[in-house]
Length: 228
Ligand SMILES: [Zn+2]
Image (tube, rainbow, N blue to C red; front, side):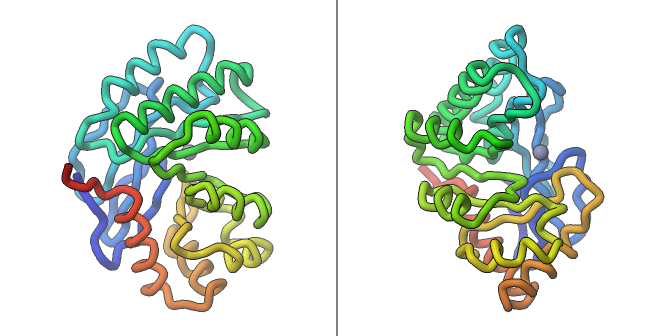
């Protein structure tokens, strides 16, 4: 398992990212793409079925792909998986794919990356059914602080939407959350992870170096596999 080093910027959710000096990325592979995780310096991999690319026909072959690869050493997490009211198949299929993947994450004892658009009730209902022991990480978050607090109270972590996190209106939300529950990401966009760290450090009144070390300990707490 390849881990970030002290002083690295951690980009917790990327697509098509390339590692570069001082930046550690978590590349999110989608099962329908057929890409494979590998031992690559400066990066780690997650694999899941994104709700946008899910349908009645591919659900079961894609779940088999996730199941087959889930335990592999090069995968540090499952997902992104989740719910989207604006795009993707029926809520029923989304729920099935999501809960199956959450179950796989539990079975291999890995955290789960979550994509959730206007489906917080569905997500919370699934959380009640699955009762996960593994942490869930909400990526691309730009909701209200009350919602974030509710998710955190259920052992979830919050990674902010790259375009929201650099805007002034996100500062209040960022300040309201315990920093041991947050991650930062570019989500495969052109956003600069260093700029995102600077903004969040400024919001929380700490230095970028301090923020890096907090997010590194968050990473180690959530992803580092304990020897069994
Ligand atoms: Zn994504």
